[in-house]
Length: 188
Image (spheres, helix red, strand yellow):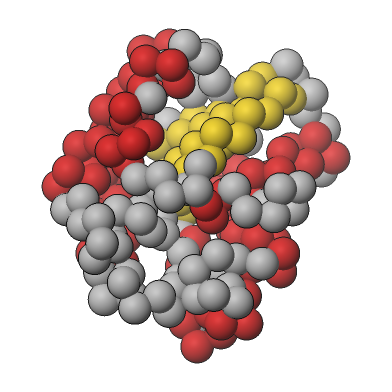
C-alpha cells in the first residue's frame, strides 16, 4: 500500500451504522494515523444490503481503481427473510472481486465475514455463510484475505456489543476495526 491510495468499504448496515465511529471510518483513521498513509476513503456500506444488491451496483463500483477494499456483507444474505443461498453468495462476491481486480491487479481485498448475531432470523444460518466466504477466499492465491469478524467478541457477549443483537454499537465497531487492523498489518 502507498500514499495517495483509495480505500473503499463495501458492506451492509454493520459498516454503515454509527456514522463516524463505524469500522470503515475507524480503519481509515488507523491507516492515516497509525500507518501514516495519505488515503482517500469511500464508505459504500448500505443498510439492508445483500451481496445481490451490491452486485447490482458493480458497474458503478467498478469505475473506481481502489488499492484497498473491505467487503462486509453476509448478515442480510443469511437472513431467513432473504436467504440468498451460500452458492449465490459466493458467486456474487467472486464477481465483485474479479471486477475490482480488472481495474487494479494489485488491489488488496479483505473479505470480512459476518459478525456474531443473536437475531433469530440469522443466528442459525450465519455459520454456513462464514464457511462459504472462507472457501471463496481460498480460491485466490494472492490479494484476497479473510477477516474473521466473528472473533471480535464471544457469542455470549453479542448483546453487550449489539444492543439489538445485530448492529454493533461503538465498542463493537472498535472490535471489528481491530480485527481489520490485524489483517492490514499482515498485508501492508
